[in-house]
Amino acid sequence: AFTRYFQQLAPFYELPASSYSSQSEGQRSKVTGLYLLLLLTKGDYAEFHTVLEGLETEMGAQQQQQQQGKMRKGLEEDKFIGYPVKLERWLMEGSYDRVWKAVGREGVPGEEFEVFSEVLIGTIRSEIASCSEKAYPSLPIPNAKNLLFLDSEGGVVDFAQSRGWTVKDGRIWFPLQQGEGGRSEKEILVASGQVIENTIGYARELETIV
Image 1 (tube, rainbow, N blue to C red):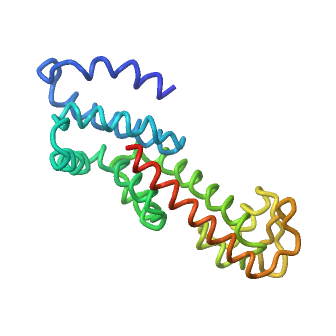
Image 2 (image 1 turned 60 degrees about the vertical axis):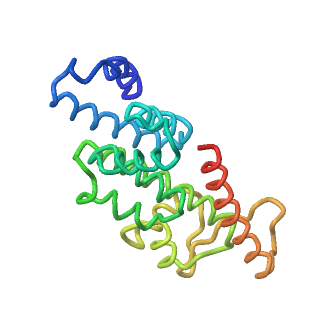
């Protein structure tokens, strides 16, 4: 529903700035920031950068490469738009700890952003969980708590049960992937490295496309 409302508003935002009040301009910034955050929660990075490039174009960013860098910096200085822009960069860097701190109650630019921020954390948590299943046979509960940004070990147990994981002897045991029974420690380390390498490669491909 929010996506539909934003798309209905978009044509009005293309009107000259003199057509609406400064208060409306501030609301535009907030609504656009919320839409960008929503796109992050959905993993729609292509549309995210399309919207971002449209904003840069509006600011006169279709000039030299150096000038484009200045426009991106200018967008980051906007209270509402800068929030999802920074989150997206940290996600691409794999700096999940910075994302976690930014989505806290004191880090969001407005209470409207809290809902989508919580959804974003859930999305990140699911991605980390999927990678962990492929990289490790098991993890100690305290380690899993930190890795998944959960508040308590009880939260780890609840999350593990929702994923179909086994909790035993203070550890989270992941289901064996098909054809991966009895992997050696060396094979596990190789798998972990491949997960990390694939993540970095994905980020580089996105950067190249943008």
